[in-house]
Image (tube, rainbow, N blue to C red; front, side, top):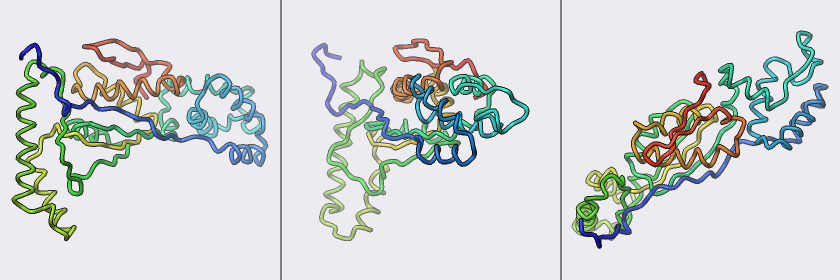
Length: 271
């Protein structure tokens, strides 16, 4: 590669955005605590919030404590004291009681990601939901691609191939007259057929929702040193977004820098 060669603007990198999450409806939770004579748990909620706990973490602790009637000491004759929400979350993770942390859902969108990435991502089925750019409906003038940095010595050859495919696609559109077709159903069918020649590296978007249990598992699997580069790159971003927001849920995370990206391992392997 010539020293003066620059990265083409058509090469893009994926970026993750944290756009939604499960939280508490304080008024309804307070009403429940009042009606069931467990008002003192409201003090635990306030203490946890002041300590930096996220409402989603408090929700998971609530469900765990509800299972054992341990929100307060007046509903279960087997107990004489209760854990704080922080201690409760740590006990959940230490014991592997992972089902209760499925109650909190986190919502992300990943833009400029390839179909190599999305095909790997959607293999995670439990506790997840996906919504992806439709290749049947969507056509673009520009073919952007996500390129693994390991190909840097041959970026010029990759760009040559990308440029050829973009120009070829436009010729195919012209030959088929897609832009002049008014029947949307026929246009959709042609778009679907034409995409078969586009590369797996084509940039698109995917929305993904994971509960906290699924997220812990996916972060550990997909930041691993043997995972594919792009999925490591994305889940490094996601981990950095959530680790400080959900400090209780990620208190046992162990970080190691491998090939420029973090590899995350959790001490509590059961969850």
